[in-house]
Each structure stands twice: as structure tokens, then as C-alpha cells.
Image (cartoon, rainbow, N blue to C red; front, top):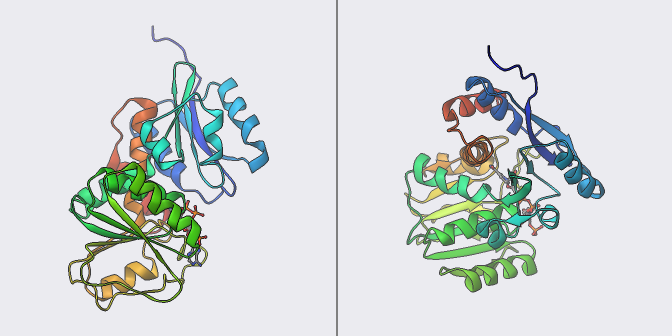
Length: 286
Ligand SMILES: NC(=O)c1ccc[n+]([C@@H]2O[C@H](COP(=O)([O-])OP(=O)(O)OC[C@H]3O[C@@H](n4cnc5c(N)ncnc54)[C@H](OP(=O)(O)O)[C@@H]3O)[C@@H](O)[C@H]2O)c1
């Protein structure tokens, strides 16, 4: 007779805000498709509650959890170990359980890298790449691009100190050449740039008409334009680039692949990627 087990393995996401986070949709769809007794819960955790929340999920036997704003950096001091690339990025978006230990990982940059390679068909090695933004997403994306052999990374950010620090960090800790460009006026993208990445929140729901202040008119005809923003997938930047005839990669690709990597870390199983992708597309009405 089969063993009786009505219990579910638990994972989830800590964030504030968290209600509109779509990760659970793709995770639950994947658990169902593989018939896994697992559940993914969105957990509204305010900044001050983080230490108690980590203690709570330890006590409840969670298999791991995702972290989003404002916890990606703060969570690190509550974990037992941090993976080397998450340490280099300086942020954790996925926590996995190894025995009784919670290990911090970062799957954002890995997700972006896989998207650029597989969905856009571009190998970042040897490429000159402009990245808008110097926050958590930019740190993950630029570190992984540097580790993947990008020749030059140009970090463009509104706040000078944050941008300078990221460029310095990339120069100190990786083999790439990084430089900072302040963003005080329209950024004209020259024709020697291979890839442009928006890793700012400009264009993120609900500010869906916002467009990063860039001029694409001098860009090379095959420059790839990527947006990290998954909601909405067709940001003004993606639409403008497509209208100009440039190849594009939207933020759904990064979102799916960072989730695919986390799913595999948690369950040890190969996730049904198509199921996860179409669950998200459906959620976004695509
Ligand atoms: N697709 C995915 O899986 C995925 C994963 C992670 C994040 N993301 C997306 O990445 C984006 C950034 O997230 P994050 O965690 O890096 O946020 P963050 O740490 O708060 O950083 C935000 C960045 O955007 C810049 N920025 C915001 N508003 C701006 C404005 N009006 N003008 C110029 N710069 C502005 C900030 O510049 P300052 O330094 O000057 O403030 C900063 O560089 C979000 O849209 C998020 O949805 C996507």
C-alpha cells in the first residue's frame, strides 16, 4: 500500500509589496504539471519582520524561498552560507535548503544570461554592452555578463555614486573592463554598442508609459535591446527598439529562466519550462 502523506513541501517569496508578484503562477503550474506535492506562497514580509520571517520558515521546514524588494541584500546576514556568484553580486534572490542550512543564491543574472543566449541567440563574450541602472537587477546582470566574458560594460545610472561603485566593483572583481557614464541628459547610443540592457524600473507597472531617456537613432542595425522589466513585457523601450527594426528581448525571458533555475535548485527536478512560460504569458494576457 502507498504511504499516506497529505503534507506539502513549502516554498514562497518574501517581499513588500508582494501581491502582484507573478512568480507563484509559474511555480504552481510547474508543480501541478509534474504532480509534485509542493506549494508556493506569496508572503508579505515588511522590512522589520525579515529576521522573524526567516526564523519562521526555518521552523516550518520550508525548502527555500525567493526574496524581492526590499530583502535581497538584508536577507544575506540571516543565512548559513552564500554561493560565490551571489556574494559577488551582493544580493540573494533565491534561498535553498541543504540539510538544515539555508544557502543564498542569485538566479536573476543567470536567468538573464540564459535568455540572451537562448532566446536572443547572442553570446555576450567579447561584446560591448551598455547597462542602464545600478540597482540589484543591474548588479546581477552585469556580474554574470562579466563572468560570461563581456569585453566592456558601460554602466549608466542617474545616481552617480551608485553607478561609480558598481563599475569599480566590476573592474576590481572580474576580468571585464567597466566604466561609468552619468545619465544627466539623453543618452545617445553610439554604433559600436552590441547590446543595450534596461535594468532600471523605468517602464515598470504601473508606470507603463515611461521610457528611459535614450536615443537609438545612431545604434547599429543589429544592436540587441533587452529589458529586465517583465510587467508589462512590451515596454516603451522594447516597442521603440522594435519600431526602429532592432532585435529585442523582453523581461519575461529573464523571469522564466530565473524561476526555472530556482525550481531545479529546490526540487532537484527538471522543470517543465514550456508550462512555466505559458502560465506567465496567460497571466499577462499574451
Ligand atoms: N525579469 C526579471 O526576472 C527581473 C528580476 C529582477 C528585477 N527585475 C526588474 O529590474 C528592475 C530594477 O529592479 P532592481 O531590483 O534593480 O531595483 P532597484 O535596486 O531599486 O534599482 C532601480 C534602478 O533604477 C533606476 N531608476 C529608477 N527610476 C529611475 C528614473 N526615473 N530615472 C533614472 N533611473 C531610475 C535607479 O537609479 P538610481 O540609482 O539613480 O536610483 C536604479 O539604478 C525592475 O523593473 C524589476 O522589475 C526583473
